[in-house]
Amino acid sequence: MATIKAFKLASLESISDILGETNTGLTGTQISKYLAECNIYDPQLNSTKRKRLYDALALKQNNDKCANNILNFLKHVMCPSRHIQNQEWFFTTRNQLNIALAFKGLELTESGDFKQTYHVKTFSEAEERAQNLRKTLLDRKIHHDVLTFCKAELLVDNYFHAVFEATKSIAEKIRIKTNLTSDGGILVDEAFSYKGKIPYLALNNLTTESHESEQKGFMNLLKGVFGTFRNTTAHAPKITWEINELDALDILSMISLIHRKLDKTVEAKKIYEGYL
Image: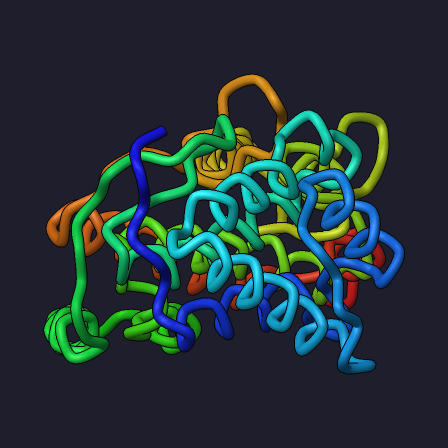
């Protein structure tokens, strides 16, 4: 690997904050293990995980006068085969790291390697994109639950992060309305399918063939969205797709439609019991 110019200390701090986050970051045991496996000395000057990581990485980079071993450490930690049982953590953490890496013109790919990407210099670039996106979506009268994801920090790297997070909000709304705990296509089947049982949620009273077709069509739409932008399997995740502003607008508009439909769903049990 060619010599990689050292990270700014602010970027190292952001990386350490992500990996050492109290609730969702690496455990203290994992930090010790990964630092040792990467031959990075752990001075253990601080008790908090994020400060401990920062001390170790900053000291290593200062001694090396380059960032090569910092990137090797990130590759080691984010090796996909290490997170087969916790893919959600991998995707979420990867997205967060890529925001910090974008300031260096780098992206951590789905395979755990690095590639050159669009280089940003300031958050103002992302802020401008976020404002433009939000204004256009407001003109389209987009659902308020979607507007939450038009944030500068999600657009530093590319528009995919806004789409990815907005898609996650669909599953979260379904879980809130049903108290189910699954995800993706399984969640859709559990919430809306009525093969031999009353579904949790219904778009209508399910009394006609047309009503049943609408219910099935909505299920297929949800599965298509999850399969394309929310795929948590190890085989074909689409996290690396490049999405431009026009793509983002169209996809977020579709997610807005889904949110409006979900807001109008009713408990199917009440339909069958004659309450609706």
